Length: 146
Image 1 (cartoon, rainbow, N blue to C red):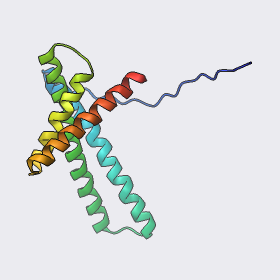
Image 2: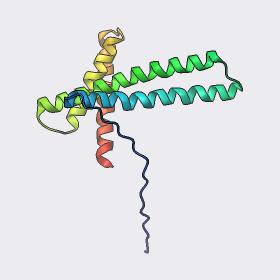
Image 3: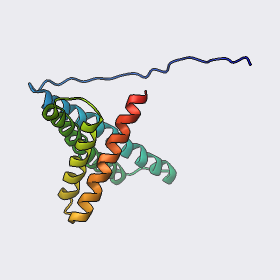
Image 4: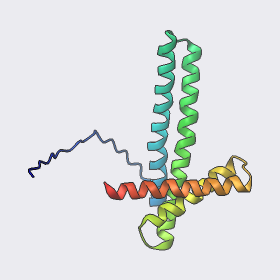
């Protein structure tokens, strides 16, 4: 049976900002904070823009609310990402190997820390640690596939 194959590649513009803090741990943590914080702020801006377009007009209050939301979301998710990247790197250094287990442990620690920082009870902290581990491990496996 005849068959055909289609090949191609899709490339996107890549922006990489390097800020040297003098320590690989700090460099990776800051990089994670900036990248994910920017994505979260952009998502908040896009969401609010959609709602403003639906409403049909913009006021200075809308603009202020959007800016505050962008800062809050960017700082929150940037911090979570920075903690995760730092934890994963720290686990890698402690274990002396680079594999999916670092992502799992880093995700569990990050999930537990974020949950504890939100004053959750111990059972919720455990659930969030398991969720963090599962999401980080799944992302690592998906990364291996590509």
